[in-house]
Length: 139
Image (cartoon, rainbow, N blue to C red; front, side):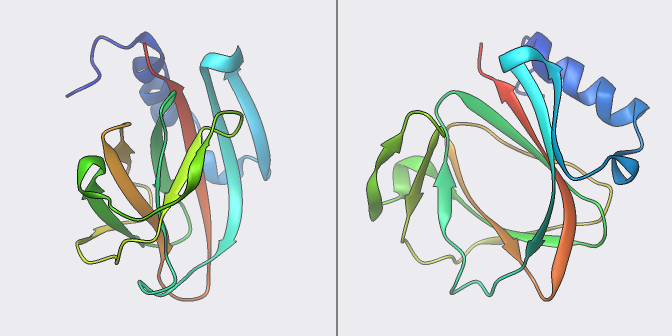
């Protein structure tokens, strides 16, 4: 596991194991200050052509589809060639318009982790999805 030395990552995994994420109300739930929190969201899904890659510098994403499976575009960050603007340091996000080709499917209740070195295009599918997005500070 790539983040075993990160105490906030370990804490996030414990929280996932011990918590009924689907029972949490929508919104931000702080677990450990600015180091670790989870956003529970309901989002419209997109086609691969509509999805955009995103990357983060300060936080690792752990994403957990809750209501159904979710597909993600995945690409090494260093392969992204079409940035949309600059990194937003407040929101810790930079988008890319590179075509989404490589896809992974994550079943409901399973986790997927994206570190700063991996661009990911979430929310690929049909309809809407109820999901958890953990933000884990990079240490």
